[in-house]
Image (cartoon, rainbow, N blue to C red):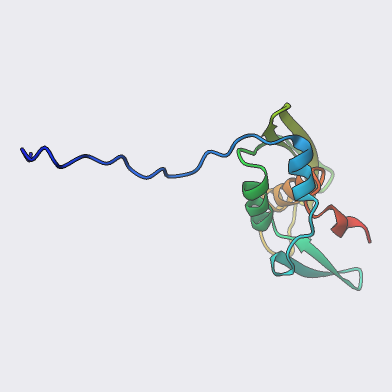
Length: 141
């Protein structure tokens, strides 16, 4: 250990910045803004091209506009030949914690990418975020 009294131990830089809570109206107003085109993906469905926001981009928007958000899986059910998953998305705000729930459904036998649970969870998360305004306009077709 140094005996030099001029050396000071400096506190570490904060790992993250704690943002003050905002009103739910302010959060929703920001989430309702159009998603940047570079953050949208495309897929073919029923002969037409649909734009959607991938779950990982939805997470980035929530991180930016709804600091402290969280979600949890409320239920996972098998209904017929489908996996139905319900999630609850919660956003802390000055009014308290505001939550929205949504479901995602995926056939048990997945013909494309992923598995039934992860695909249903992705859908449910995006739908719950849309209930706060994120990409909601994309459903208006």
